[in-house]
Image (cartoon, rainbow, N blue to C red; front, side, top):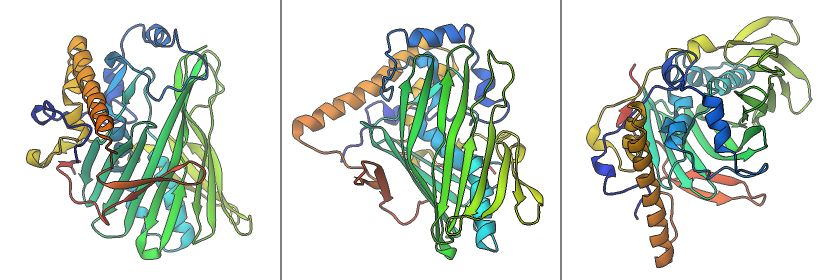
Length: 388
């Protein structure tokens, strides 16, 4: 089976890995061109409100030097304090559930106004190891865009399975990306599975440019009967003044009795605390400074083990040109990647072939939601690692 992202040039392209999105420095410090708002507004001059932007052709000058698959993956493998493994160490159901809530918040990363990752091509993959955690992603559908993630730990304690379908829409003065699909965290030795929603990404163009996460994230564990609702509040600022950006509030409660166990309050880019409803005790649930600051950039450990479909290879020349601010080269390199994907799609259609994902099965439920199931029980060690 031919993978969509393979091309004659891919094998010869050097992989390019860039700094993850973090609280300070990194890509945010590098990508600050002049007249950014005017340039962004010019993009949407001929776009009607309500338009679906899933396949909007973004010039390379507005791209982060990485794929959306890499952004999804970085939320899992690029961390400071390891909130994921803490989930499996909880002594009781409430402690484990609270740890899952903290881990969910840790996957929230600071977006950068005016920049977006590359839209992954069909069959593109991203495979990275961080210590004993191995993470594998695949673009399992292009229309609509659906990304799947599978992660396992050598200890056998934790497994992650995601299936995400972002739907960005233009609303005249803003763009909002609703992220459909679920994230599943499985704590195998406790036979517990946690189903987690994703917040939406809101990009305001006027009256003042901003980008923020918003909406309600619901976390459910049927085995323990516990549930959480966490609201990412939109800033009420006007012209950049006032408001309380990056604020989160919520609660953990019993879905069986409705009884509230604790209240959640704070800011996802600072600290988030819980207040026990019975004792009144307040505890720090999540500290962004220890989780998502000063994150390390992944590196290639095994060049020969890289797949031609690896994101860092597929988009390597584009990312290299963007980092060098060689905009003509980046435009041409991006066009080659996209034209190769379209050519392979045409060839399959002419032959009557149906593309099948390599690492996941892909289905739709009766409500039209996409579901992904890993074809292998565990993820093997990757050729790309996060330095310890």
